[in-house]
Image 1 (cartoon, rainbow, N blue to C red):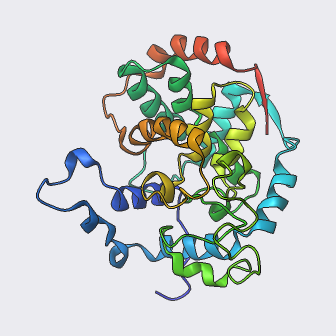
Image 2 (image 1 turned 90 degrees about the horizontal axis):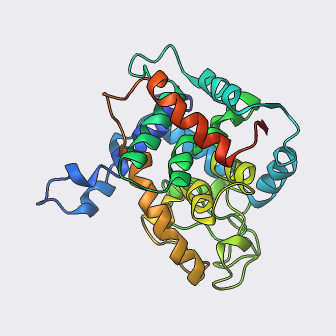
Image 3 (image 1 turned 60 degrees about the horizontal axis):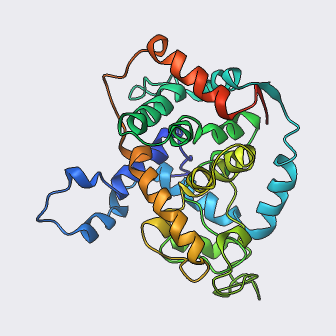
Length: 287
């Protein structure tokens, strides 16, 4: 395919995740898990192009600039329920395989969490965990919004998907950033580590004053697959990170595998979620 374009819609990235990390409840018991890692030959050209761009441009300086641009939260302000409507604008009507809007995807995740009896703040995390995708509606390209996340300012792990694409990143041969620890110290803790830019970091920064730390870890690291699937950055994590990552691992299956075709209607669910949002969040959100 000549001149491939990146993702036709954001769901392509999530479908690729399911190909890389299939539902463990549906994996044949006589097949080794490692066999599922050999998926690249069947990966869509659009997904490969997406990661080529992501890995080329997600440098330390790029991330710092995006943090300066967006973490002032001075682009828009709206009631939270309007924000969900705003998020629903990401639905791609041209995609014949996608008939769920973003809100329905989020409700599937949060309802699965609620049905399993987890704390209500975790239900709220399920509802809002992809809200940072509004970055696409604020002018950000897909590769700067979704995709696997990873630390910047240190060597890129070969456990990150398509690591060969990092060779075009300006940090790949940087005197400091190309080193194992880069600008960090061994086991410095993820609170001292800058992650690649995207919807995870954005929604974490948006919600950091409102949720328990366990929920904030879920928001900030739910796309950090090289760590919670491969333990690629243990050398940067401290004991507190390892403790909190148990919550990230608890959340991850709900994010990937919660697809319920028999979802209750919004009218049935609205009273519960209205009260839940009011309990934890302000009436308006700044973007």
